[in-house]
Image 1: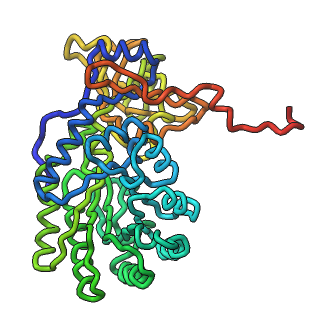
Image 2 (image 1 turned 60 degrees about the vertical axis):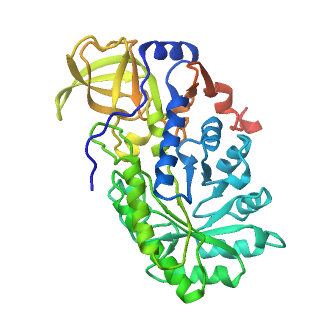
Image 3 (image 1 turned 180 degrees about the vertical axis):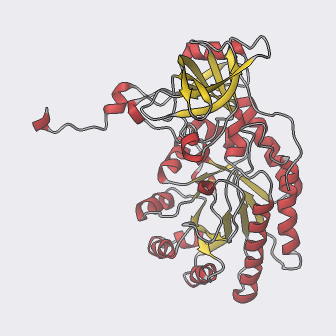
Length: 438
């Protein structure tokens, strides 16, 4: 089920905004618009609650774990899903209550679990039998009665998305498999240990342009929950049929309307629940769909050259002052983006095909064979749309390049840094030169 074309809801910078930001903070630069981000969250929460009142939206902070982004999401009514101790510490540093955070992860260490428990984590999403046994040793005293546990299940759903962001199929490192009986054994073990079992969770994948995989996952875990009530007398308090609604990286990506997306997912679950006596909280965990379209990246064009190419005859490279280290997704996933010249603005319709490359010691084709104004020149600023998710959180110091700063355009139109650019000193601070090599 694919949606019909929708309005372009992505945030864009004006030329003056881009010039001001580049002058203030340099390039490359991540930029997030606060007004757009808050509106996006409000729209998702409204859509989900309209479909099902007892609903919860959690920001999957792996998409963008900067403190300001997490705090804005919390202010707008999101809980925060963290996938590591580091993300949890960042949420706490942002002033978010531990009780509003949920800890995920497929290989949690005892130290991570202990830190989460010490600080009063909202709930832990358990992923394997070894984790349940670790929790048995850690949940002493009042902790066993107070700490909520959610079981992550593998529903055997293979979504239409990139293989590297598909997480709900049977062959996955995540969760307890339903088909082979692991999920039922995990439920039994939680009940035997006296855990405060809160419910069941599945996540089928990201960048989903329609809800069919998420509906299938929701139906599977709902029927599993009903089965657990019949067999073991356990009534789930929450069901988390999660997956990531896609965003418009390019005009070819046409995600479904949020309201319809939520309605269809809820419809599948509530129809399955009818007559079961189970009345759960329903949860979703958007990350990309909340923050991606609220962000752009600004680059400055540097060296340009045209070379012979077996593939396309001649290829014109426009190198920018960033690349693989600030956006690894084109290399990792073959990701496509919308790229526009923002300064100077295009004055006509004449375009030319360029390959926008980075400056790293790799092929580093950021945006291969895209259309830009034919008079693109050295010093021009380009903006890459839909980079609010995963770009900053996946950035590295490859080739010892500093990770870019991130600026936030406030609701009053002013702007401020929310992540500063790495300093040269920071990039070598972790290195230790043994005395005999000095």
